[in-house]
Length: 155
Image (tube, rainbow, N blue to C red; front, side, top):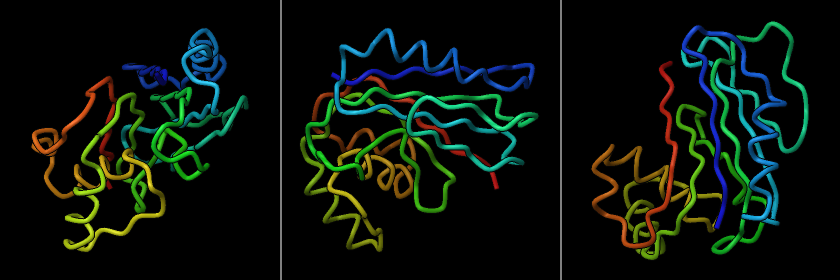
């Protein structure tokens, strides 16, 4: 079972990546297959800063929101399934713990609607489904519905 964590500063202060990393480290037993982080600016003035492992954010950045993920790879074992994951345009980000059992069928339907996929992960299907159907996408999922943080940034 994967682990997810997030930090948000309502005052707009930059997220301390070390705290987010510590939150994921204490959950390391939930996933041996990697970790990842993204720092986001809810106002979308700053570009997202994706961090694959321990690191330091850019000084003075406005990244007031951070997501962390500790991975237990089940569906797509490749690095293309790492999280947090973004849509191709970078507008939507997700960190997710769960499994969509009908992701193959949904992927085929979404391909028919023009969506492209880089990975075989159900997480990428989740993002495309959200882009296509909005919040109603959850009614189309068959599977283990764990925890998820899904963000859509304005541009």
